[in-house]
Image (cartoon, rainbow, N blue to C red; front, side, top):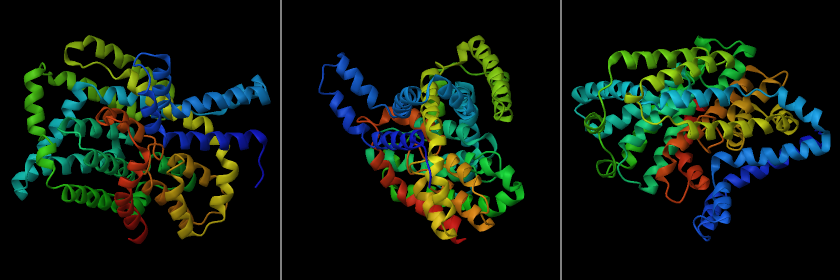
Length: 429
């Protein structure tokens, strides 16, 4: 295992950023000790924002990089990085959080839920939640995981009535795990699979046969488990989708169908061109014009929140290349079973797409080892906010419900049961 000084420092600063994410709750408490509008209060509050943690440490690291290697070397490194994913998530979050897109998604889910209620005679709240937490994440296999996370998180947020800490962490954990595995029906939607599908020759049939149906089963089991575990709380803590639709219809102007169609058209354009930064950003800029023209049917665009999520992912990317010196040799010397378990654990502290990408650089991996690596990466994608790129988008939407800020350790604990279900389905079936 060989490394340069800057590679070692990159790993150290990345570790410090990971540790920082687990301390944000305590840092937020420190900010409350100072006067509300004081400089100290704002400083510690900034340090407690999960979305800026990696960007802050990446900024400090790049200053050190310039000091040690020089300006030219730092610029060369920056130019070697690929920031397509942060830009894409920024664009898709803004578009998917608009009122016409959310209205279309909510009405579609409500139609499906009401059909199931008539067939199985199930309670409205439970059926609505089941459809939202199953169909939403599984749709990520077609509209991409970031889009699925954004729409599903907004729908969950609209249904939640009270901020029960226990329920919030359980819902967030199931949402994160389901989205991570829900994109595994196709080779082009889940970033961990997308990173390796072309190089390893994984087509639609291979991905669905080896990952898709197992992931779908895990999504259904996780959702049913969540509904059963908190079966007494749902009637008190949740609105039905019909109630949400009725409430919004009375407070907002009715949206003409052609405006919804135009928004869906732009969403489809961004999804289809999602791997081509110039193309989808061009479409997104045109969309901003459409949003301005249709302002009567819009809520405030979530530009700030989407930028923070993009900043979060950009910070992680800054550190990605400096983890190869220790991750690649580690992955290369693991058996299939150990590789699967190691991938589940490692993805909690390393974005799962980065993990599978590094694994694809290891020569001589058997087909069984390749499966173990990717299966472990998507199974562990709900353990932390940094485990799967779309998690940051989901947290951004639901963060206001955590009065004391998100406690990453509580999320990790809550995510263990749904992760265990994913592990069992992807490894034993």
